Length: 529
Image 1 (spheres, helix red, strand yellow):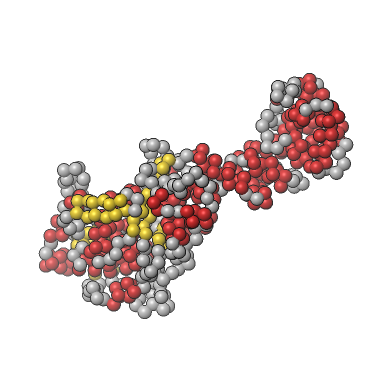
Image 2 (cartoon, helix red, strand yellow; image 1 turned 135 degrees about the vertical axis):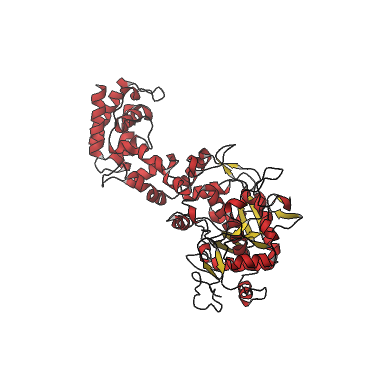
């Protein structure tokens, strides 16, 4: 086992380093060594190191800035298939589109996978037997296989200028295609153009006939090859296009199951023709319908739809996001919806993936998040909630665990917390109409009586604990001969100044502390007097 280092450089233990085959010369590239043949030992060694006998899946994102929900779903399904069958989950960075590359985007990918618990078995950061795992570090590999493909008749050099190749007329369906003129050049003409130093790209040669493939979601699909374009495989700068690089990489990395969006269904016949031209086994395909913002529009960062990072910033828990994303286009069967990651591994079945687009419903995600919040231990919730509590409550002496306890059953998102407890930091201005509550049998007059009765009781509490506050106030209820709410409603309004609060009068009174509670009750008496 060995792995390659950067382009043209072999790491220790590599018996057959990748040597430089090409020299960049501005527009196009020039062959330095054309002695490639099917039996070349380099190719034999590349084939020997392909892992066999296990399920191998890959997540292959482009580092373009953020992890959108569709990307995360692909990563999750890819992970689940690998873990379900005891296989390997590989991370590969597809960065050949340098124009869209964003600095720091690879770190976003690493951090997202780590945050979600989707631990990869091989990848750029941890290595593996079939590296490198970053496409720009594999360009020599692509060039060699492109040359091999030419020798096998599956590709050809195209010397057309870019604007020339784009001037071809559209077919009867209005699809603009390259007319394949360079595929008809004789060997002598090709050699002459090469000798002249003419720049070129390498294009796939589409054969006549039809191509049939089977997708595990969409079933058997047949395409007329006449509808397929002779796609560019190696660009003029020597870098591969996605259409070529992903096939080479999937084969050399031993990928058995390919999970990707349904937008790649139309390209799959071209990929299969590449596999057949090389004589390689075709992997199993799992194409997933898109995640939609609504019935007509895909989710898009451009339109303000949230990425995974955005959802975390909005106060959603990673586990809840992952659970919800799993159900966007997949059904486990039955009524159960809440699944932790290990449980998803157990129940996941490719047959449950739907052909229909899934609509991202933020209200549904809120439901999932609240369920996960309520299922947390108080200690874990306190840890997650503390930064949000401290946004508004700065007192070092306040019992933040008690605050977390009243928040946990009443919180959908962590970002709800500051607004829910802002009254703990500062009593808001409020109208005395809040003291009027028919169900609690209170009005302003009765509320004033209750506050006047409660004030000396609160002042007289010795050890300030929640238990002592509860005991004192409920003894007062019994003494006054009123219903609980008759006393506790006006007391809560005086303490919080809000109609709706997490926790009741007892909890709020305790959390505020004796001195602050007394001040607020006194203020309530003054407002009602």
